[in-house]
Image (cartoon, rainbow, N blue to C red; front, side):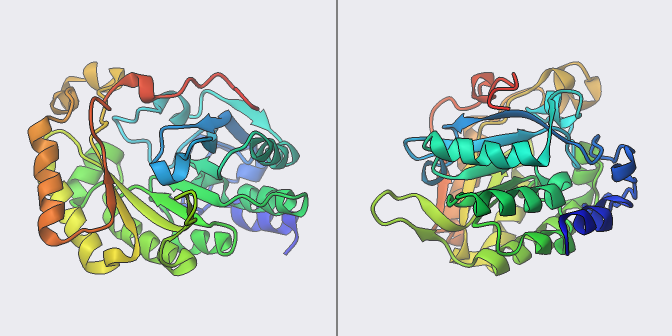
Length: 309
């Protein structure tokens, strides 16, 4: 399939994600993600705030894409998730950005919120690899994915870095307007593992070369949701992936200004986080990361100034 054929097949009636909105993005129509077929990004730079085996000492070569197919009410990157910020770049420029990040010493190429750009990313990665890109490729996603769309990435992605957010449909509906989130996300996790297999690390640097890290952000008042999700991971994925349990939830203005979400207008307490960690230990989750100290700060949100584009 040629590059043009891939774009026409996937974007003339877009069903890349579970929203399946059918927008003709190639003709300039905007999908649920807030984007046309034009690639829009907000930042491309070395990023040091991922898991240690991703960021290492040099940083992860991170490209933050504009728009999002999930758009959670509490999103810390909401300014770009809504698709209103960012800079339009060409496929050729995206390939060049990958190579520039490699030249800057990045340990990997980290694609953040990439779902709605899967076909463009496939093309840009292939072109960059033809020009000398050799770094591992990280797919960093909310995990609201279509299994068939992920299959387009088979052989291109080395490390999957998916979220696992909610178990209950009513919670997913309230916070992300996606009652089918758990079903779609768990199908996606199984496909991701099929593609990349068990974790592989560089024995000298400790950097991940291949595999999957499942991220779970603990939310205020939703410890029970966290426990249900961790049990699923343990029973279905087991020790075939790492689990990163995060306490960095930061109340953002869109939550603080909406009385309907007052329950989210606080940080996760130490007691809530410890309950989740204790549960993970109790059920036997052996491979993972946890956060220590004051991580729930807005300073962990990078400036979306167009750097590196």
